[in-house]
Length: 333
Image 1 (cartoon, rainbow, N blue to C red):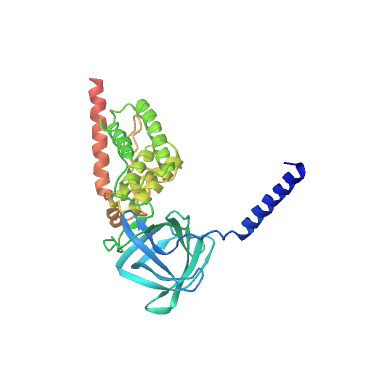
Image 2 (tube, rainbow, N blue to C red):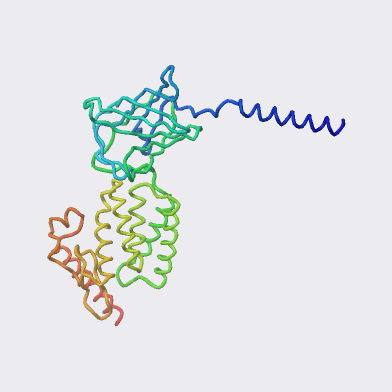
């Protein structure tokens, strides 16, 4: 083939390539039609149902179903969930690229409307975001029916996007080791050995936290104990935060460690504790709770936190002091 024919053939192929590129159909939008589900743990919390409107392009009808009552904090967790499921009709929608924007209307109040955006990755996963500043999008998945909004919510607790009823066994192992090292009791612990083990356990727990491996209230309560046994104000402040999360996730028993972590943090920055959970054992000095602001928190509030009354604390202090005195006398024999 001559160079002239070769050049003409190349030009023709190039022209055909351009022609087919120009005339190729537009990229298909993801399949929005169907049910999009937001779960909190294993419970179905929200179901968005989309059906294409015949004769329109990118417009949908459908609804958003959810429990009648709940509150949400910055989109991160949900609390006060109760009531029957309510279906809010979609009254307007539009689509662009991989997202559908839609407006729902309260069936009991036509003036009560909310705007949402549903985005899809074309693989049955997506995100649902309410049009409120500062709210993170919620992860949703495309599922087939029948789908029923859960009704077995505990309205006194909070539910998180990563909610789970299964505690992390690694966190349980770390916590059990932490407690075992403290079983000998006051005056019988080799703190040089234990403090090294405590530091290693804090690093293990920090890794679980950063990897998002803690989910249940029990997980966070155990982590709070690990950092409560730290040695810096930051350790105690993190422990207090972990205890708060544990309580928010339904672990009511974490109220005591929530109080104790704050007391220990206050002591670490040379401020008086306020609940009376901390006892100080200095060599050749009496057992004490000081510095301690005994007037700020009444015993009625202590009871709500699982903290003993001041009278019971004094009995506890005397018992500790008696144990220390006995150990000292035994050691001098």
